[in-house]
Length: 157
Image (cartoon, rainbow, N blue to C red):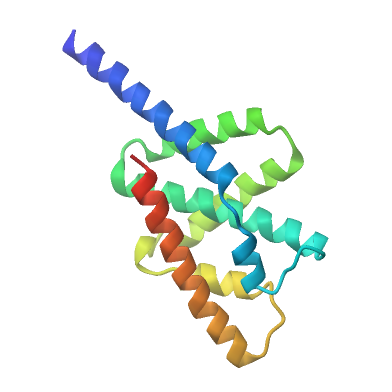
């Protein structure tokens, strides 16, 4: 009987974690990130593309936080989130965002939370900047990504 109660409590916790992240993802304002990368409101195509990238990165960062807190359940939780989110947002952009999330997760799979340089370099590749500004942007993006990961990790539970 205790085992059934524990499983029910765990399922409730998992459902709450999924719902919390869906709300966090939908409520996150990526405007400062885009502004830092030189993308304003009138850059419609780049803005749409980079919003997709940032949302995908946030899902991958959430997956990273899950692997740290719930190593056995992280994959199942991500699959459940993906299925639920895809059902609630049945459009091409959601499918692309979830695909990008898998690609970002692959980038971070080895270094985990210790190094976000590869992801930051990837984001720098979307900008046409000189070397000095690229290095500056790279450092700022590493810090932004680390802060985003920390915020997601704190809100996980």
